[in-house]
Image (cartoon, rainbow, N blue to C red; front, side, top):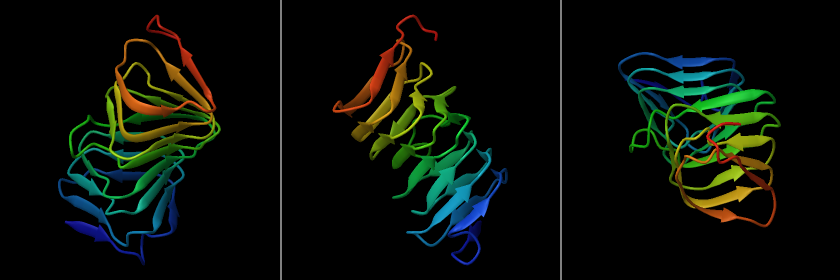
Length: 171
């Protein structure tokens, strides 16, 4: 068990974060943030954000356990970003998820479960053909791409933004 407290992680910027140990990496000091300007990889054990907001400019790869708590994970990269959620179980789901980067964010390999709200405020978000469940609302003020073979369970704000449906399984 390892925890990073407010003095060492909160309101700090990092390049890449990789958690590959069998134990728990626990962020401490809810209400703060951790900014990852590269990739975030959780390949073993548990990453527990404990309510600390996480900003990611690169890719998110989770093949272990992720405990979101009450936080928001924001993808703010200007280029192409990918998100591998690790699945939709209680230790892979997100609380709130935001895509605010001017580039693209594409789901890969796994469905995604968002227990709170999903906001797409810039660039392009693509389901990549993966299923998507959002318990809260979806606020789309940018581009939202669907391939056609995914299942969506969500309430969409249709006041603005663009939804592009390809329907042939590719784009």
